[in-house]
Image (cartoon, rainbow, N blue to C red):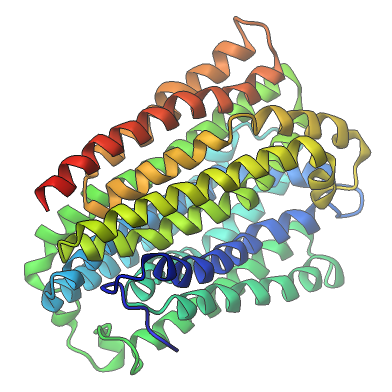
Length: 459
C-alpha cells in the first residue's frame, strides 16, 4: 500500500489520506460495542434491562481504552517527532517501550478486573436486577484486555509510519468478525449478553494477530523484537528506553488517559444522578445517548488523530508553515461537521434512538435527552483541535490540564448541581454537557492558539 509522505507540502492531501482511513477504522471500531448494544437492546424479554446493564459496564471499557491511549497515544507523537528528526533509533526505542507497557498493564487489568468486577459494578449503580446481567458481560470482556490494548495501542505506530490503510484494516478485520459473530452467539446459540462479550473477544484477538503480522512483516521500518519469535528478549526492552522514554510516554499519554478516565467518572456520575432522579429507565436512555454520541463523535476525532502525526513530523522537521496549515484545516473541518451534526440531531433525534431499541417507552425521553445533550456540540470540535495540537507537539501539561478541566472541574459538579439544587432533574444531567463544552472548548482552543503562536515564532 502507498505510504503517506508527511514531509511533503501537500498538507490537505496528507490529512485526507490519513484521516479518511482513520475515520473508517474508528467507525468500525465502534462496531465492537455499538453492534453489541444494537443486538442486546433487542434480546426478547430483557432488551431494555440488558441495555442498561451494558451501560453500567461502560466505565470499565472506558478505563481500558484510557490505558491503551496512555501508551499508544502517549508514545505515537514522540515516535512521529523522532521520525521527523531522522532519529530512527529513538523511534524504535519508543515503540518497544510502549509495547512493553501495554502488555504488562493488560495483564494487571485482567487479573484485578476479574476479582473486582462485582464490587465495581455495584459502585457504578448496579442493583439486584442489573448486576446478574452486567457481571458476566464484564468478566468475559476483560478476557480480551491483552488483545484490545495491544491491537489498538500499536495502531497509531502503523499510521505514524505512513500506512493508514493498514491501520484501517486492523479495525476492519475485528469489526466485521464481531458483526458476523454477534447474532450467532446472542440469538442462534442463545447466549444473550454473554454471547455478545464472547464475540467481541474473538474479534479483538483477530485484530491483535493482524497487527503482530504487520510488525513482523516487510513493510514496517520497525520490527517488534519478541522472544517467542526467536528474538532477543533484552532487545525487546532496551535499557535506554526503560525509564526515560517510559516517563515521557506516560507524561504525554496521561492527557489521553485522563480524557478517558474522566469520561468514566462522568458516566458514573450520570448513572448515579439518573437513578436518583429518574430510575433505571434513564440509565438505558443514557446508554442510547452515549452510543449515538460515540458514533457522531468519530469524524472530528479521526480528523484530529489524522492530523496529529503530520503536526508531530513537521514539528520535528521544523516546518512551521505546514503546521499552521494543518491546524487551520483540522479546525475548519471539525467546526463545520459538529455544526451540521447539531442540526441533524435537532431534526431527527428519534431516528437515532430507533437504531438501538424497539422499546417505545424509550423513544420520547431518549430523543428529548439527545437534543439537550448535543446543544453546543460545535464547541467540542474546538476542544479536540486544542487537545490534538498539544499532544502532537508534546505539550503534556496543557493537554492534561484541559482534559481534567472540562470533565472533572466542569461536567461532574454541573451534573449534581443542575439535577439537584437547581431542580432540573434528569434534564440537568444532560444539560451539563453543553455548558461544559462552551466553557472548556473555548478555553482549550484559545490557549492552544497562543501556545502555537509562540511555537511557530521559535521555528
